[in-house]
Length: 527
View (cartoon, rainbow, N blue to C red):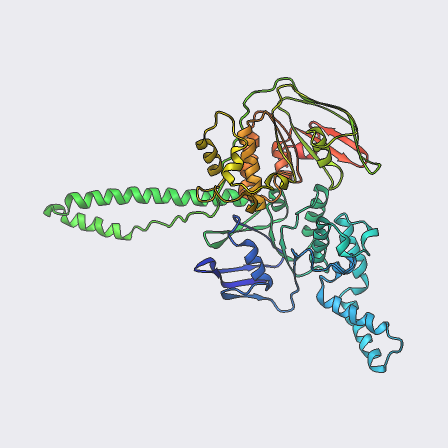
């Protein structure tokens, strides 16, 4: 159990959040959600002790071990992968280091012999003799091969480092786990493994995630950080969406009724307060007015961009024909004799493990990467809007937001259309003249959406479009693509996104490519 008691965090004059009091109970999994900038990660750091609150305090039941998913990829550069995981249990790791030090001595004193005997008891009590195998099991579950367990963290890619840090947070079955975006850079199979791993634990968990399917599968409660305060809801993310909307709707309806009653009473008082025969009634109604209190309906910190993709010219019949394309890197075949026919209006999701070649395939069919052999034939009227996984090169320039967006405008689009597009994507008039290269990752992605909006494509291709997006933008994008009448081809690890959009799934694996038009689990209803 972990409790926040009247916690306030303030930077400058305005509190990020204030007077938060909440208890996270054993065995429950709490999804911590809120708009970007609402303070989710800050609150998580307060719970972990990384940040000292401006006022209030956090209390943790005695002898409870807390683990937190580290976001510092470079904190363990000279540490072996397996050791990095075991360092997640600080007490066990400390005992192991001292135990190993004594055993490494050429000659052991009597005092050191007694000490190491006691350490062996403590080591056994903490399940130390199984620690390496338990750590290795976690790494294997996260897709890190046994051959990599003894190499240094500095030799790992950023994506794999994050997996090691996740294993570190999970190691040793901590009593309290604080996990900030644990599904980042995980493929579908690994996310499923993580879900089951968390379900098998009896820890208190607080999880920040933008993965709606993940939150639905693991959470017993949702904690919404909005209006500068926390609101606790029973159930998963879908339950929260229903309950929060209903609660707000009931509050606003009640206020509407009260406002109508207030107008009725005010009218009576104005009309009859000077009338001697009805003065008593007017006084009574005036007293009733004083008792009616409108409930405060605070403005939510959530802001949803408006995204809408319209096609300028419709494509009929075949949208894309791919014939036996091949692509190799350093004599390793990544794409082998891949063929596909996509009709106009189809919605094709490309799925598979990390590193299997999804981005390579997309780059080949968009002709942004030269393939070795084969054919890619697009409909002659194809107008493609492309969202690359890495689009940093598009922003490697020193121009303003409005000048960058103007590059993609139709000849009939005036400056008002461009300004309106930026505004709907949450770029205010005060910011449209700032340089494009200072934008955050999420802001750059919204700019790419604006580019595609102005292109008015009949075919949209997207490579991991939900990465680095907040929940509000993901939901807006999801809705926009569901309403798009053209052809959609996309890769994603977001199962909610896939299942709500795809009519067909291309699964890439080591044995080749499988094409599912109806029988893949992500295409089944009620998933």
